[in-house]
Length: 283
Image (tube, rainbow, N blue to C red):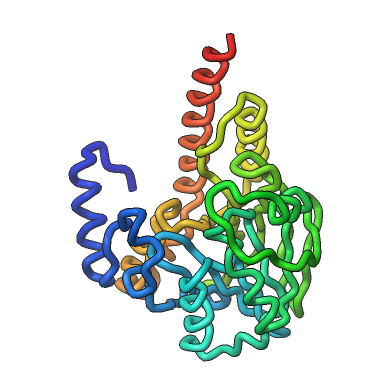
């Protein structure tokens, strides 16, 4: 749903977040506060659960042969993901794979803990594994042990669950995106997790790479569900309110192909604007 009036849209978001007990994005100094950031875990699809924080996401994909976790959070916030798995009735010792979307601290900071405590096998692109051995861009975190590398065409299978990978660099040199199937009362939908959408980097070449990544995703025509690694990028909490209120026979609020491709269009416009500004400086 699109709102031409930004004030109306903000009012709707405020109402939705109040219903869930979730506040607006916190100031940066509150992002690390465990109690402020804690969100009760919740089920989104038959096989997919949100186990993240208010400002940064983590997801649990359940298979018949074990668990797949997307992103680790960081510092004390990693407790949110681990506690969430347990609160949902699952055992963190059943984690078979931890898929890391990119090597910034907020997504990869808790990787070493998952490795040490639960022996999870970690997937990341080679470029972002390399980042974990270099000075951190934003904040240091425990260096993970390098496990498996993924790129476009790679996949993992766990029982009847398969996750296909696509390397979509830009936000970092080796952003890892994922494609997998989610189920709504048994009905399958194609979900996509864009592993890094922020434009908080610099350089013409890097921005050109980002634009290429977005355009390649746009050429995948059957994506139905946006699974973001920051909840604000996919209106996760607002959609969850709608999911709780859904009546029998109504569509699943997370199944929104037009919304996903419209979002990609917005990302592309923003990136092209950034590229034009960077080229102007260079020239």
